Length: 358
Ligand code: ATP
Image (tube, rainbow, N blue to C red; front, top):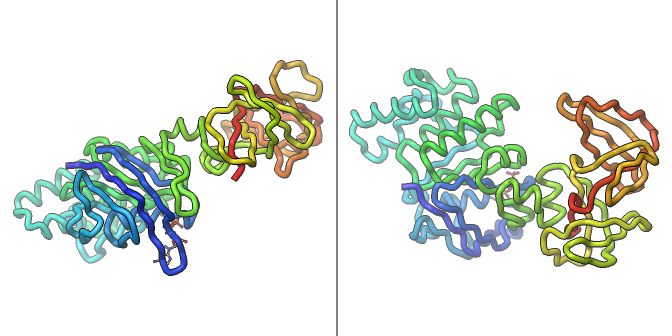
């Protein structure tokens, strides 16, 4: 029942606002894909076009082999989950879940069995007679998922479904939603602006920016091989420095940073842009007092500005003469370096990425 979804050269404007430039995306059958990006980049618009709540100005939307571009939403057989749950407050939980089944004239006995089955699926057996106001946020969201999949949809769309929950519950619900999705093997398009959530849950992530899809890939691909400084910065933490290309050999670039420092960095992805930067993840950096003897390909001097302890990590901020301080991640049991300590920040060429700057 679950089906693949394809967007082909889809564009959408709202008056003078271009919400989606031209996007194409293929979502596999049974895949969990997340649209990730900052506010206003077009995530919800993409979801609403798939659901049929808005029509594209151009392009095609396919569900399985069917062109659904002009099909009204109620004929698309799509399940939708919203941040605010959108449960009917005057109906019991049973009536809420049964709603889409009644609309499709499912026989009464079948509805009863299906409600029991769905409450087991979302691990909330026995709440049939309660009202939505008698549930916690996490419970209400489970019920809205149960309702969305009650009449098995061809695809499940979720728009920031965990946005209203506190962090601990949010993390628990990430696992729960993923379990339900895998149990049902349902093609799912999930929207979030939270990169950790996207990485925890998705088979693949589509990173969006200004109405375009900038990169699609697994969490690992996107983290290790970002195609732009925007993606590198949005997914995970990274130190970025403007860089001038001096030369390259065997996949390693020779670059100049901070006006007069020459460094080497890996060319992991094709970079077309003329303005370049080099990116180094904070966990790839080593730090030592000035003049320490470690052997690394690159080394720049700096001064410790501050350090923060967050339980599992020690974040050290170092002024290296760039616009922003360098962030170095260390294990929390390291002795913290005092503020103003002169240090060297070091890394290997293999751990630095050459990226397009815009
Ligand atoms: P958020 O994370 O804040 O929800 P988003 O990535 O989901 O953002 P969209 O809601 O898709 O972004 O909006 C994309 C752009 O289209 C924004 O500039 C937004 O202001 C605009 N937009 C969306 N819906 C409408 C509308 N109905 N009328 C006018 N402009 C709209």
